[in-house]
Length: 178
Figure 1 (cartoon, rainbow, N blue to C red):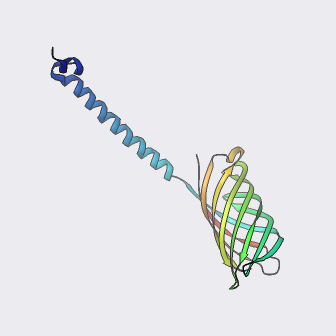
Figure 2 (cartoon, rainbow, N blue to C red):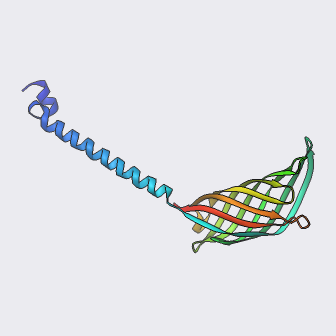
Figure 3 (cartoon, one colour):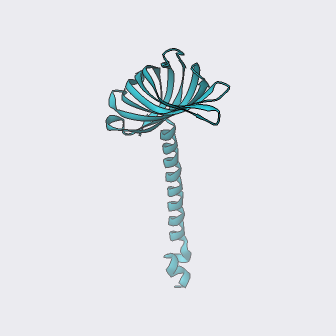
């Protein structure tokens, strides 16, 4: 017996080499199938749409920074559609001298989605005209209870009433329970 035979476990190493090649092919196929299933699952999701309307909008504080008006705001409202329930928000609106408004808020919704209930926290970043139309991107940051495993992102657009400052509009969210 040569040293090659003892290492490979067969005559001239063929049975072991064939087994190793077969195992490598099996693992490669398993990895390919597994990654395809994972990719399909990761891309699967539901698009939910609906509307929202503020019931309160409060300017907590105002300051002038570098010629811009900065408002710290909070409020509440109701969302309907795929996501249903009351929400609150807190954040900052920056209005430029040209009237463009950029805002960053955190929304907290006591929501029901597909019959599951819990609390969702969203990050919302948007822009628009001061006290006019706006659009934003939203991302689900976290959830609790029946919504603890909900992930998603989307967009909303709406209008702000110049007298009451209340906003209303529509949303579209791509979401998935993991």
